[in-house]
Amino acid sequence: MPENILITGGAGFIGSHLADRLLEKYHHVKIIDNFSPYYSPQLKHQNINHNKGNPSFEIIEGDIKDKDAIKTALKDTEIIYHLASQPGIKTSVDNPQKTNDINVNGTLNILNQMRNTGIKKIIFQSSSSVYGKVKSLPFSENEQKKPVSPYGVSKLACEHYVRVFSELYGFKMTIIRPFTVYGPRMRPDLAIAIFTKNALKNEPITIFGDGNQTRDFTHVNNVVDANIRAMTKGDAETFDIGTGRAYSVNDLIEKIIKITGSASKIIHTDKRQGDTQNTLADTSKAKKILGWEPKISLDEGLKDYTEWFKSDPNNNI
Ligand SMILES: NC(=O)c1ccc[n+]([C@@H]2O[C@H](COP(=O)([O-])OP(=O)(O)OC[C@H]3O[C@@H](n4cnc5c(N)ncnc54)[C@H](O)[C@@H]3O)[C@@H](O)[C@H]2O)c1
Image (cartoon, rainbow, N blue to C red; front, side, top):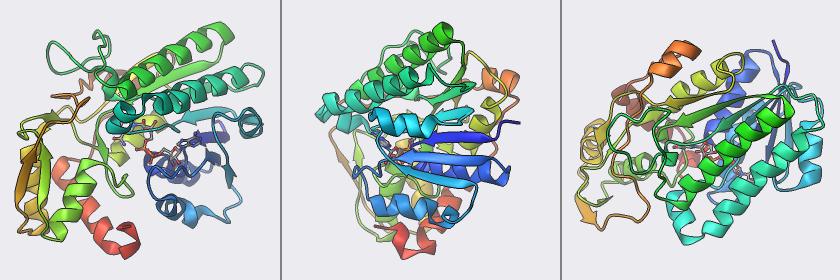
């Protein structure tokens, strides 16, 4: 069992849950994160505060684009989970250069530095956004990719770089493509976070478009499970990680309103540029090769998230 694990973006939403799970399994976990101001750095510190002081947990405050910071982070690392990125479809439409600099150049910096180390494997967090326009649902891993946002393009470019470097330099790799992730600590810019916050305050909930767009909403624990399995399985493979069930945004809001007992009104505005119409994962490959399956349904997951959100006023900043 590998001991020394590096998580880039380890103070973020998914990365901090992954760190918790790896620490439970007695690994030594190092994270590198620049606590980017894309959303409140205070939330990111809250995500990892409980692990500070744990001798098996190490924090490097640094940027994945910085050669020296990555060199330090990679020292003694056996497995790297690469999650640091500039997320957000809208950000990528507004500022594609920034998304490319962090996602593509940052990833390339990591891969370049990995060449002279003893790292055994990289597990790269891609995204369902690589698919974009598809002919039919569900998406499946070998489908032709036609991203509809610069963010999707950046993730697809990273996937290719990870594969090519793995082939050139002999380290193993697995690519995880999570579908619309939600749950405790989720990014405040994501739809479920915004809808829940407004619902609890009985404030209007705004939907971009008619609300008939569908998503495969995936609880963060399901995504962490897949990442843990990818440590020892699924070499040279790519996996869709969703639930295999899609809900429309209208259905999602109905569920949130019911769970929160909200009196919020629904407002519709224009559809946003860069958003995909529908997403749905075909999870059969992950089931077969990783032995993984999603365990948390949308109803259970939304209750879990709402309880977490209400449990501490600091979760709402
Ligand atoms: N949340 C989702 O729905 C979702 C879906 C698909 C894929 N993903 C991918 O999963 C990964 C984690 O996403 P998340 O939702 O946890 O996002 P997040 O923003 O909460 O986490 C990313 C972390 O990376 C850090 N970071 C950003 N730029 C950095 C840089 N230059 N150097 C070092 N650290 C940097 C941020 O401070 C943050 O803590 C990302 O790669 C994202 O693209 C997320």
